[in-house]
Image (cartoon, rainbow, N blue to C red; front, side):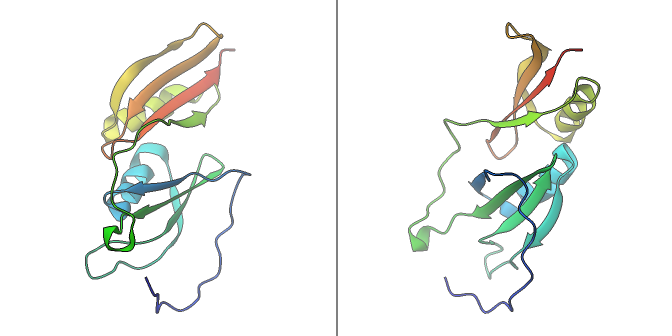
Length: 140
């Protein structure tokens, strides 16, 4: 994958650990994450001839999320997401708003938002790209 794109200024990375998701349709996922989770796109490489991108940089809830498309011809075939959950840590007075926005955008509820045995409100959903998301907030 050679890139002929001019060098662009680097976007600020927020947080100390950055998840990097490989999804089927990175530009569509970024647009969805804007609607569902209030993401702000701070950088993206342009689409190739097949509409794919190797890199999109988002800010969500004070953190960085990066994503890109699969490139099977370069040894990176698409694989369905499994074995991880993207966890959003929120405040008790905002979790309902975040939850409702994500469900209305098209996330599927997996575990309803509820007070859990550890004392926080927590729920889990799956986005249209197969990624599991959870929301957690301390109960006031």
